[in-house]
Amino acid sequence: MRELLARVKANIRRNEMVGAAGAAAPLGGSRRIEHGRIVIDVDLMIVYKDDHPLELTQREYELLKFLASQPGKVFSREALMEHVWNYEGYVGDVRAVDVAVRRLREKVEDNPAVPQFIVTRRGLGYYFNA
Image 1 (cartoon, rainbow, N blue to C red):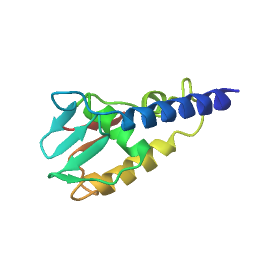
Image 2: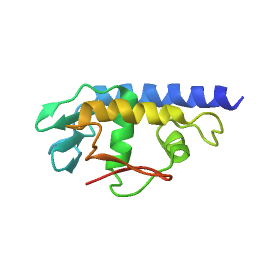
Image 3: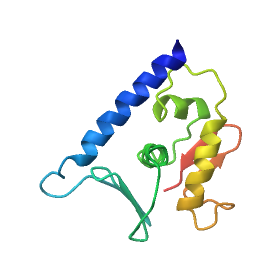
Image 4: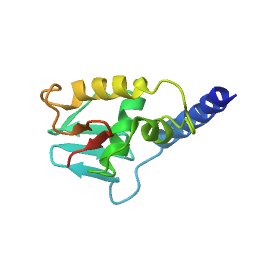
């Protein structure tokens, strides 16, 4: 039942994002999260690194936006499952977070083996290094 509920919430969230992506940007520009070489255009749902757009999946975009919106704050895998995947009280395998972080690092980092932006705090979780 929990999985069914989580899947329904995820589909609702996806539909809301698709609707938001098609809307026009507000007058005066769009909302942005800027951290050095990384710029996230929240309204257009585009991430730029060194002024070049990155090809991210929706999940990768949501994960990066969530971490970058609270730089320096460490989030456990379980917390990321709740906030990014919308799996409230999820008790299953949380290694999906590790896979998503690895794929995101491959696209965002200059050297994914030595991450500068998405950093692991051993034993605790992940954070965005601003």
